[in-house]
Image 1 (cartoon, rainbow, N blue to C red):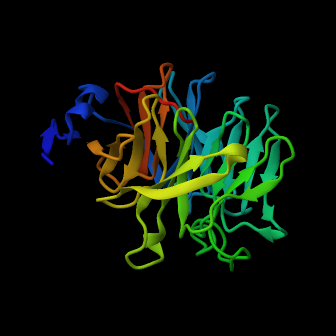
Image 2 (cartoon, rainbow, N blue to C red):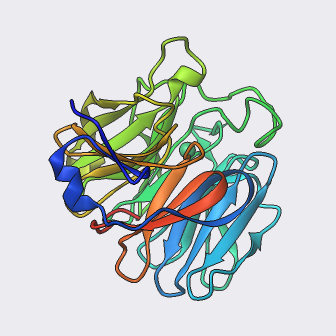
Length: 307
Ligand code: MG
């Protein structure tokens, strides 16, 4: 595979990546978090909400109209992943409460899921809403491993899994059985595939640092689960999918762009390890990147499909 660095920001590994990027330099929009995660874009308000999960225990808000940043919620129950549901409401994974919540239009916070078969979750990490309204989230142990991003506690549930909350009944179902530390997740544009990152190498020597690919069947049942892409630099934590089905994922050296066939076609280098990203802006073509202490932004020639 040939490697070519263009302008120090973009690494083109496959000609297909050239059509995905502009010549815009990556911009640091703000700095001041310990570990930024969980970006969620609100199109109507033109703002981004994200989490400072490591000792920060707060959520921030970046306003695209004037570039200002303010505290959105503090304390945040050590929030981590966020997304926006079909009605435009904020859905949040909380390490401290070990639950997934929804912020209603009137500001009230509703618990969506806190237990499975009578046991508390470990610490919900990342979340996505499918077009049928079902809410899918991962439940690794990072929020109970220490007091740094939650409260140290013993797991009640055996293992770390991905769960689905039924949009009608609210019933929570376990969807995976063999992941080590499931983390970011996103559907393909037609929702026939669910990609799930496993960052298990943080706990298991030579453990997973990859994204797996599951086929989504009736009632959301998952099958397959083959390894789709292995990170060559740091962890694949959170990621998003664009309208062409490409995966734009966090990694240690920035953002990796992966074709649906699994080929890593290019990178956008970021000066700090990236935890997560989302597509924002009026055309959903501006990558908003949570990278450790800072929020970065860059326009690309791709349109976000997943929220
Ligand atoms: Mg995560």
